[in-house]
Image 1 (cartoon, rainbow, N blue to C red):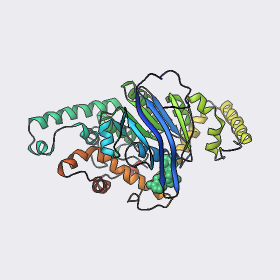
Image 2: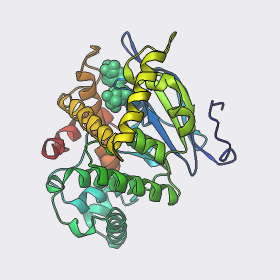
Image 3: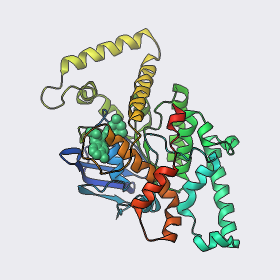
Image 4: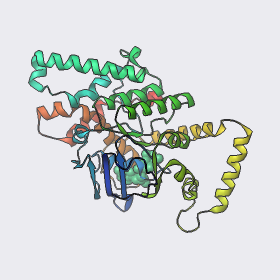
Length: 374
Ligand SMILES: Nc1ncnc2c1ncn2[C@@H]1O[C@H](COP(=O)(O)OP(=O)(O)OP(=O)(O)O)[C@@H](O)[C@H]1O
Ligand SMILES: [Mg+2]
């Protein structure tokens, strides 16, 4: 396990996630190229990079949605099976770039769905509603309410998920992920579309999650958020890890700035442009106290809006085209994953493992609330 991190404070902590040499190809496109990443207990690690850099694809490789073309992913020393519900059972939970909630279920029910992988009661127990089932149901209910309290939504337990404001939907997704008692939480753009206050609250929430003993790997475009929050940050560009290190190291790296400006990072890093941006930022910073944050928030909202317009299609792997549909494909899969994690056990009870079939069914049943949210 070698990284280029300069962090020296957490070297003895337990390795929670270890991804080594992860490569994901779609036809001729290499979306993720030989990426190594380690997350240790007690850490919040950030994953940044321009649009299309491969961040979400990398998450999908970590969570079993995609089987990496090459490479290996281990959780606490055990290689993960490439199936989303087994990854969730192992201890990794995630949220999605485009919110995935059961729109017509209540807030509480959405969290209970996330609890499903941790309930041991089988199909017969559920049908007969015996004492074991009732006890487990009561415990799940209690845990779900605790989580709603944790995210500050207990007073909305009976509201339909689709009626929540956007920021609260994002928080609810986090609660649903936490309901599976993860040791590692993966967050894909958790503050996209949030206003600055909500973003700050999300930051506090993630610190609190870390303090609960859950390691966090978070994708974000909001640099202020990432550099405030993370112990370590890795930057992906064109599928490759460009740099990894402490926030100060990464934000001071001119290749990172160049990558965000679209300047090729190989060869000349575009020093002139970097200098120009730095001068402009200094100027802007002197002019007002917090405009940079607002600018970032705006950029991010646009990013999310762009991403979400892509999210309405169906079959994974059906096309090798490298188009916007790929995001939709990913989200259709992701949709399946969100609910797969919750319903897998019930399905397991009914039939042998049929991830494809369940994915389709759940894609239908899990109506995305993103339309409402927008
Ligand atoms: N299922 C797929 N089939 C084909 N290409 C895909 C698929 N999923 C992603 N891609 C492609 O892989 C590349 C990386 O996409 P990905 O969504 O991982 O980027 P990202 O870093 O998450 O971007 P953003 O910041 O916009 O969310 C893109 O070129 C995308 O079009
Ligand atoms: Mg993405």
